Image (cartoon, rainbow, N blue to C red; front, side):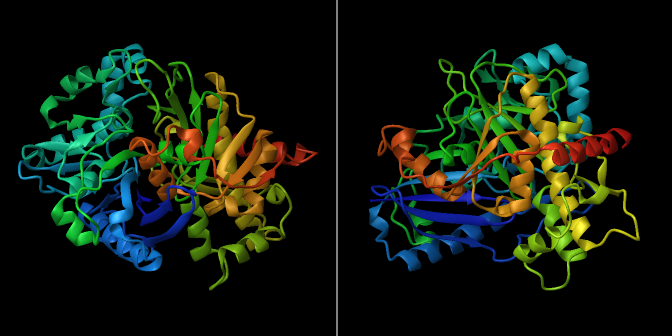
Amino acid sequence: MYLLGYDIGSSSVKAALVDATTGVCVASDFYPKTEAPIKALRQGWAEQNPESWWTYLKEATASILAKSKVNPSDIKAIGISYQMHGLVLLDKDDKVIRDALIWCDSRGVPYGEKAFNDLGAEKTLSHLLNSPGNFTASKLQWVKQEEPESFDKIATVMLPGDYVAMRLTGEKCTTASGLSEMMLWDFKENSPAFFLMEYFGYDPSILPAIKPTFSEQGRLTEEAARELGLVAGIPVTYRAGDQPNNALSLNVFNPGEVASTAGTSGVVYGINGTVDYDPRSRVNNFAHVNHTADQTRIGVMTCISGTGILNSWCKRNIAPDGISYQGMNDLAAKAPIGSEGVTILPFGNGAERVLENNQVGCSFHGINFNIHNRSHLLRAAQEGIVFSFMYGMEVMESIGMKIDKIHAGHANMFLSPIFRDTLASVSGATIELYDTDGAVGAAKGAGIGAGIYKDNNEAFATLVNMGEIHPAADRTPYLEAYARWKECLAKC
């Protein structure tokens, strides 16, 4: 008996097959092998064609079926993780109207800020737990104002995961957690945020049906089964945005538990057992995968858009040609903690929520031509990313989150000793590394939704701890570098 998980990212689509009995991933793969293209026709814009996600999904599925030799009839449930905050628009025939505005597209910012000011901080924060900011509902307002011909065709508004689920099952639905990341869930009323829809002039009929995160959300159609080499009738029993799903993958479900990831963007995501918010809306609050009207589970998230994308930019533009990421880490390690005064602000990938939606850009500070070289710049980039995490974590702590332990997958920037040691030492938290990823987590989420596992503890009983990173005995040089970083940020 097997479970199939998909992780629909902006860089690639990953698929994983998990043996439901042992919890072992028997095969996984991702497509495309080079980073998926993002259309940026203007500064601050970021779009992808939803059809490309389906193409990548088909290729990844074919690969894992070939690798594993699993009989498709033995696959009992499908789970979906997806890039959050995207905007997919369908017409009355369920055809895509235009390319999706994805998570790092910033053009919704002025519309979200105007809504926040017009409706008032008390109203928006107490009901949405966030400013409408640059989230999906605000992106849709850009379409309404700038592309009225597209807006007039809209029959359904979806998130990327909702769209992929529809391609699999033919069913149009979403979740309360998904609506909360769109800024279209009202936590006070436990319903869609009709007041915000009315303000923006959206007809409530554009929202798909709402299903529980862990539930049957449709079954694989004959057409989709033919395209994927699967068997019709397999249920889709779980879907969640990539950050709630990352927390699920690390078995983070309860108040006080914290997960982190550091891919293209970077996130620290903790669970709060009370409905609370930052008065300046610098951190995000979403319904976690196990949030219900009777059990408050709010995912409090600081998200830094300029994370792995800064590291990859350094690889292309600063590091020697042909060097690997491991080689970059070795080169960066030649510089001391604090990079001898070099400071990098990593905010070059659009508006940053933690900076109240300002776009300050990426900048380098303190370079001395007689002292500094590539190693200093490469280390300062990683330190700057970590310090941006810490900046957001301080906001999280101000609204009641206590961060003593961070769960993270052994992947992406958490493969770097510099990154891990800096994060542990500047925060004072212990980092626990686990062998998992979003696609595997989605597969196990599907197992929970299908009733194959009785709860999350059974689903993740086989999660492998790959080690712990503790804060340095002397944290002083890390804290001094962070203080200098904050001074640079204040000046910018």
